[in-house]
Length: 132
Image (cartoon, rainbow, N blue to C red; front, top):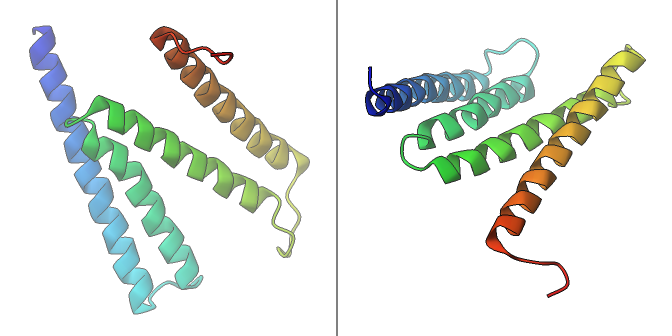
């Protein structure tokens, strides 16, 4: 199988998985809007938006790799913020173990470091300096 065929196959599978995730996200939003979620409509809305966040980079990857990378970074940052919010939410009846809080902070810090290093690498490849 040639490289071009493999790339096209990956793009097709990416688009199909993105379409399925988007369909699942929209279904979750409709279920939450109908009031059929036992834990409350907020949980349904969060699940639906989470699936839509995951679907966005998968749907745009066949069209533009650059935009898909940007959407993936935004989705991961939203996931990291959600993890931090859940790990340190004070009004829960049970307290979270310290390990969960450390994992949420570590994920957020590593993600910010990764995105920052990627931006720095792109700026240095373009020849942009801070002092100029």
